[in-house]
Image (cartoon, rainbow, N blue to C red; front, side, top):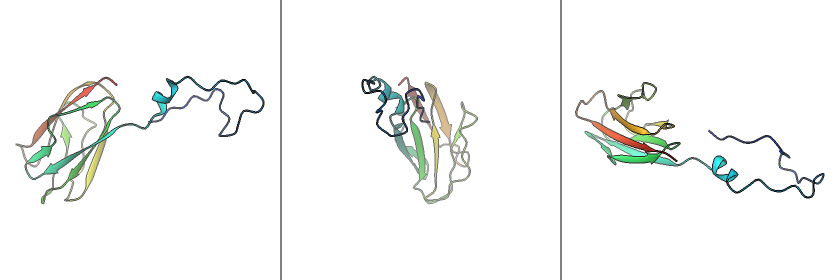
Length: 120
């Protein structure tokens, strides 16, 4: 999610009324920078890469590169639950909280992996 400060907003126009208006501090850019994204391939009987470590705010996209239907469900995050993913389909989830999260394919009980989400 992108958050913008509304104070001093000129809607893309130069601020001619306030010539000595300073630009926002450099740290402001970190708050509006695009979020990082990572792809996890779902093969038949595995997730790759695993284990995986990402920063909070990262969107992980699982892509079914296998030949059979899979899904992605989390033990720790009830909201992280995809529908059935047929070959070529994908599912994305953005991790907002640091922690270690386990996920699995409910169709194949041996398929599980973990994601270590670190602070930004």
